[in-house]
Image 1 (cartoon, protein in one colour):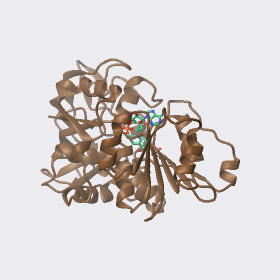
Image 2 (spheres, helix red, strand yellow):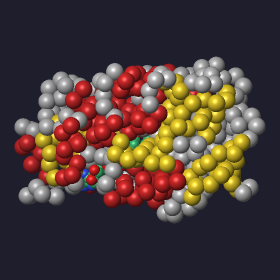
Image 3 (spheres, helix red, strand yellow):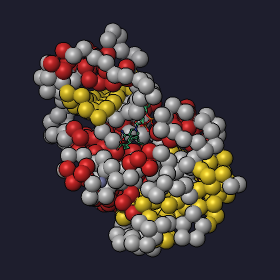
Length: 372
Ligand code: NAD
Ligand code: DAO
Ligand code: ZN
């Protein structure tokens, strides 16, 4: 439980570049583990929080929630993990005891929700500090650091032969996209699917739809450069929404022969969420919201869209229970049932992390991974 020094990318304030600094990190307390992070992805949600638009965003903080690494110390009472275990930290924990976990209805474990949302460890403390100033934790994971402290219930133990610089992506994007299709929508063979936004999440929705045996997999984006990589993951029809003459919704309803059985919003824009709902098939189509919209924004549609049988749903972390499901998704990757490598378009050291954000904003990357 001694404190140590480690290297982290610190977010001192909204909209400011991260700074690479040597920070102090307090060791694991009861029920916690210290993880040496080997690799971390940079996700759109990190950029959303850094932009200042996230109502839960706190500064100064160590961001990052898509990591993979090795357990280097365990706190008192930790039973399910040991030093040397390869792990993926989880921003949705799985305590297996709270009423949410035992309900069988949701993956949203609430065991440490209040402290996690407040940027604190479960005992209410912060463990990172620099120059005497404490730093907030982020999503319970803070993976933009070479070492981080995480509660045992928020750690998935994975096989040791899986490469950290690829499986870190399973800590968010891969699981969110594939899980939205399998766990939330429950797409069936022969279903027609429309995916809005072909980025780090949307491409994984596409590979989840292919895995589920979907018939048409239609992808909608404003960037035509996304078409070839989406085709590689199973896209059957590409639509550049800026090039469609007239309204997009009737165009998609026509293209799918009556509407989508399932649509997925992977952009985070409320106008796109409406299009995604309304392109669903009358009588049974379901739209799943994955994108995180700006603070205070609201969705709207005509209630008749729902009266006539469309369903609006949402999903966090693809409905996955992390400690149980993440190790299986790592196996799927190692068994080549799913692909990850082509989506990781850039790999770089921590000192270049701000470039990863620039590439994302320019639409030049799918996923950038930081290695330590
Ligand atoms: P990304 O930036 O990699 O991809 C977004 C894609 O949307 C890009 O290809 C972009 O060209 C496209 N796009 C932009 N405007 C569009 C429009 N009007 N119509 C169609 N396409 C458009 O982002 P990402 O990492 O894939 O994340 C997508 C969203 O999912 C974000 O809002 C992110 O915060 C959210 N997210 C949610 C969860 C969850 O658990 N619910 C998890 C991770 C990320
Ligand atoms: O239990 O109230 C809760 C929220 C759990 C956190 C879910 C966050 C999912 C969406 C944010 C995008 C993740 C990268
Ligand atoms: Zn729980």
